[in-house]
Image 1 (cartoon, helix red, strand yellow):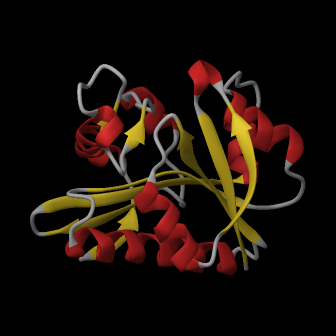
Image 2: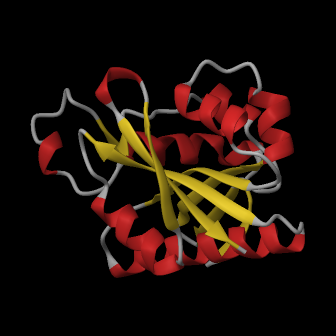
Length: 182
């Protein structure tokens, strides 16, 4: 597997993966899920706009197996500074200093051994990139309510992230903000 920056030709495959990982209240078994992107889709246009050195993919000869959509604080502010998304407003208004923000981390077949390796490789690459750019911390949200993303909680804890605060957003969704100090 190789880890590399995402490019325009990857957008369709990344979008397909995001769609596979979506969990919504419209799914009959949504309350039984332990991982996934809870009501957090991305359009092809949004993904294309997000291309930057921290938006990376894990690829094998079978195609893209995972991705990490991340931004440093400068890219985040210049591209999303006018957003109305409450979780992004919290970061933009309340978090001072430099950071890397991991917006989404997704892997094919979550829970499998191979997907764990891919998620780990993507996260290690983000840590390396952040250290190279002397970013002192990495931030990531994990859904806590109405559907706790248990796999992401465990994964971030193993990676050394600490939960900082609860951030309520729209439609009864509550996110936990996690931080890894570098």
